[in-house]
Amino acid sequence: MYIYERGVIHGRFQLLHNDHLKYILAGKRLARHLFIGITNPDPNYTKTDEADPHRSAPDSNPFTYYERYEMVKEALLYEGLSPKDFSIVPLPINFPALYYYYCPRDAVYFLTIYDEWGMKKFRTFKELGLQTYVLWKRPKEKKGLSATMVRRLLKEGTGWEQLVPPPVRDVVMRFHLRERLLQKSRG
Image (tube, rainbow, N blue to C red; front, top):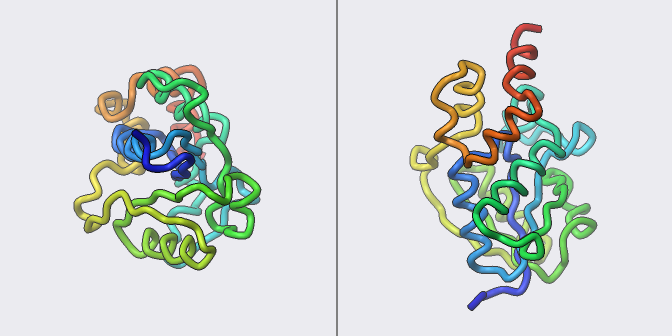
């Protein structure tokens, strides 16, 4: 049924949206156990990369690792996955030497490619000798949802709810994430 015993998929998930969930589930369909790496887990493991400097900006990373962990966990449980089917781990994407501290060496690393950032990760995975599987490669204009757009709508207070899995709406409310975004934009 599964092609791989263990897979690794990753993202910042700086508001887990419906396209993120499709991406995660695409990886899960291929692996018996999926490790979901949350990148930029904290400011110490976030650094600027020329391939996409926006990814490391503080306003692009407003939510904590724990809040994103809750978003991912709740969304996957809502989709019917069992906790034994996945592990959520930090993955400091800009520090490749640390990957093996968080994910198994024999896992296949799934990714999608839309731009130079995706290509750089692909090259890095290959240089590390990681088994790599490109789920899809598309031009940037065909990427779909962006967390930046969803966060903007969340700040505006309209139109964001249908762009995220229902449990993510609950996490946003429980942790008062809209209020935090509004507060950060004022000060």
